[in-house]
Length: 154
Picture 1 (cartoon, one colour):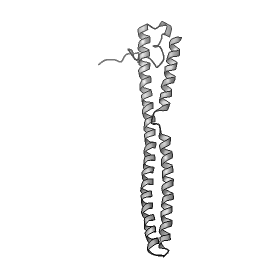
Picture 2 (cartoon, helix red, strand yellow):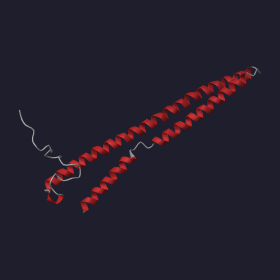
Picture 3 (cartoon, helix red, strand yellow):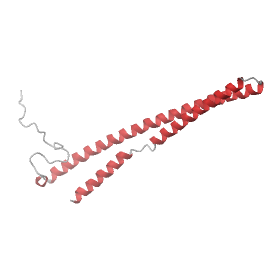
Picture 4 (cartoon, rainbow, N blue to C red):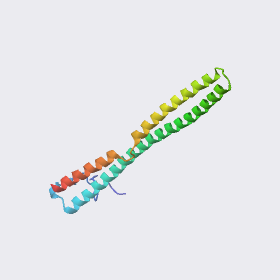
């Protein structure tokens, strides 16, 4: 049975905190190897975090686009029904002079108004989702690159 080491601090590559030197040493006291190792670990962590951000942003935009496409589909179905009702109204209006055609005409117009509202909602949702590029993640990466360039100049 082994006893745990008295120092719970991990050692080796990647053991440092993000952006910080190993415990007990100042940045100007670190070797080049330690600095490169720390930079590599930090850069790897940064890339993984940016990828997660981009994935979350694209997923959100894809959901919005899906809702918009669904609303466009509903608008298409309702417009098809409205055309059928309007055709029935035209047939009834031509076949007889009874007020039945007027009722069918009113129903057809109401269905077309509902289809127009659904189309406008669908258009708005699709515009909100476009473009499907993760713009916030791209801006964040640009800021990170700029920060790295500035730290290298120091």
